[in-house]
Image (cartoon, rainbow, N blue to C red; front, side, top):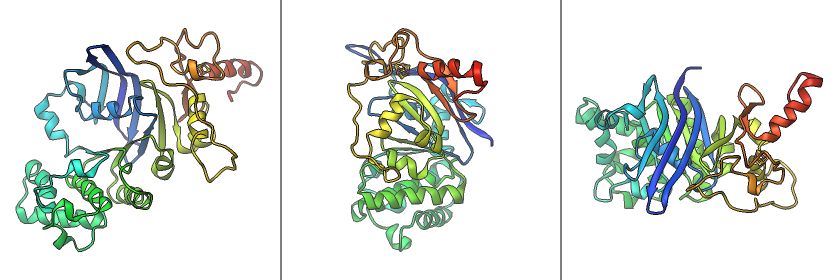
Length: 335
Ligand code: SF4
């Protein structure tokens, strides 16, 4: 399948009075056409900084993309000027934020807000823009769209507002949609409806989706692949099945053990003890060493290379490496 995005060795830093925070430290991943990649991790692990870097929404200063490339359809977005980037945002790449209320202007009707992007980016008449807005309202499941277009955000429920925000993000037919915690502000029932909606939209439009979340339940519903981030790095990436049933990294296993699951029997949830490292001066070795029950001498000294468990599954952990060394001379295969 065609790759539409390739992020290579991305480093993002923020200057503060206390020093420089290394928020993203050498992130690599790609995204294929029509695929949903979920980036998962605790708060502060760098997942939102990664997605904001793709949109070039990192406030500079204090932030900056210190190294690496973000290649979208053959173009490195780190080298594109702001004027060109404005054309890319909303048309080629769209973003949905956590809180729909902050994304909507309370003083404008939903119709004006939906058609604003279209009129700005595409050569389109008012009539055509309205037709497209009605189509989008229908796609995201807003009933009585003609009437609703004339209403203001406060006349919509939280779930309906998020549907409007999704319609706004899709109205210019982007190829890539970045959704940053899109269901966190919603209650569980509405959350399920919105996640179902993402699946339906992807089927109908073929849009690629990057989903940023801390919630593994959300991921289980709609992701094709999952990248797990910790302390500014992707420490494991694989298909949904590989991450949920064959995870190799102790941090991924810890994350899975700390959330309730209906597909396995378990007595207690096991929290991950300790806290993530200080990213003002991150450790040179594996950043999970201080919390890891399997840590070895090498772990805090040298960062492990990525080990492949399959064509789609990679993990950064010395344990994996050692296991591979033990198994391969005998069996010639890696477990
Ligand atoms: Fe644990 Fe070492 Fe693997 Fe890090 S590299 S997760 S400390 S075993």
